[in-house]
Image 1 (cartoon, one colour):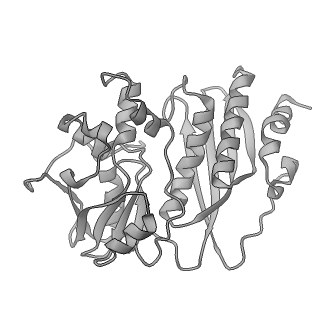
Image 2 (tube, rainbow, N blue to C red):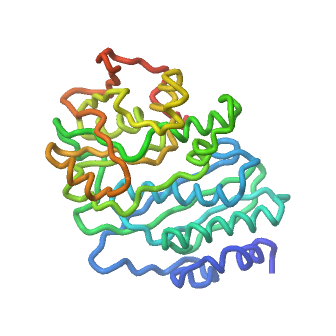
Length: 311
């Protein structure tokens, strides 16, 4: 047995669902749930770009899954399982892979998902990881980016900017340890299981920054978005850092909270279905183009960048 197949048998075959056929065939066999639409998404993480070489392997694995799970949450879909593609340096220690597989196991149990299959190869330029997540949604109930209407409120779940500030802390750019912010950076919480159909008209998750992702939503809906910076919810830990980090909070990304377009009158229903998860109205969609961020005195704020740039 080659080293590659030995690794698959040792670390990944125990994680496979029955659809994966023990990871012994060329492909998985999946039967979609009756009467449901399939939803698929893929996300990549590269060493030195999306995570540090020193990051704990189990947390890297869990963040890889959770980034994909957040995409399903934004569309109102329920997760089923995933395909995993990994490219690893030949000299990567075996205990790194064992810890990585353990992280996958932890979140498979947490989110009731299973491994369907994938691919494994070697890399000459660091660790490269890709997960393709599969889920399902009731026909006609998937939330998309392009469903907002003029007059819809702009709502967000949770707090915004914690992950970006956590990254700054990990880079040594903030005084102090900031464990809560660091945890939000390394282990996001996908907002799955919210019954948003019929309440929200459109949705997107915050991966590249609030302003930038809201811009995607506004553009696809043919509208402009106007938000008040002082209404964007901050955790106590983020608020304690003050206004100097406002731009980082609004453009930094990696929160994996949801931005929702909510028609007038649906706010209380939204709060009910979100339960203990806080939701906050931060602005409104209007005719026009672009995202306009206003201060408390309603002057326009200009930022150097709207969010993460992939190229």
